[in-house]
Image (cartoon, rainbow, N blue to C red; front, side):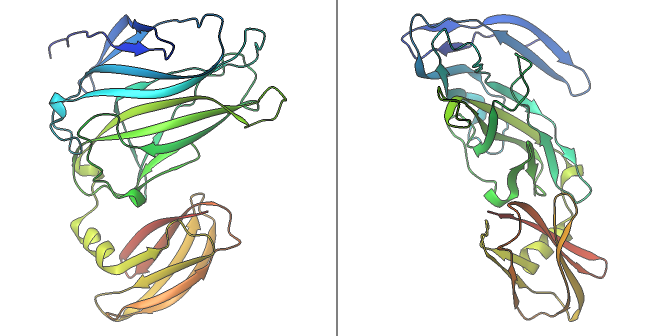
Length: 302
């Protein structure tokens, strides 16, 4: 494989100045056949403080991304923000750290895929008690992005990005925006946004990550959940190809069971309601077992 051309990304600092990032090196990962190019820079805002919008621009994307139209002709531009404090406020640390590239998913036993999202480093060694972080799934920051992945199939829980059983192989682009919160001048925590950092991620889904066609058909024709997210009552609708005994079970991601019921399944559409008002907020797994067949769905409790 030929070494790729080293391009020069540009960053606009939001105060009328811009910089070209310094090339810091390139590495080749032989096991996956990919190169990683690293850039970096250092910038000092002169005699000012406040929130600044940053713009990071890079070169063309790889071809063949399923959910970016004509990806080989597209560039990406990440817009994020950073709060600059007066010089005397030395305890605040905020970092603008845009990332983009190919990542790997881990295959879980229930067929979902997971990827560990990376927090910003704790440079002062003070721990995470003075900062908090929230994540949000956003469109990949490039023209031509096609929102073709159902929103209920992607979710974030405890700094992990989950994809609930992708249906087709290929390369997909996703965006994740991380918001860093900190203390204001009065010492109130989580009261000021220190920075936002967008990660432009691409994942290659292979055949091993795809559930069987039989299970896809069963999911599409067997179990529906709504509303999702749910706040007080979860509605379930079930249908099976034949009359049989089944079991419905709902558990959290730690495996703790919150609901279980034996069911008489049939080809006729059946409806159930589950009171979830007192359940803790988070992601829950709904399992419908009928003999050797199992349908797994997820919902979010707010």
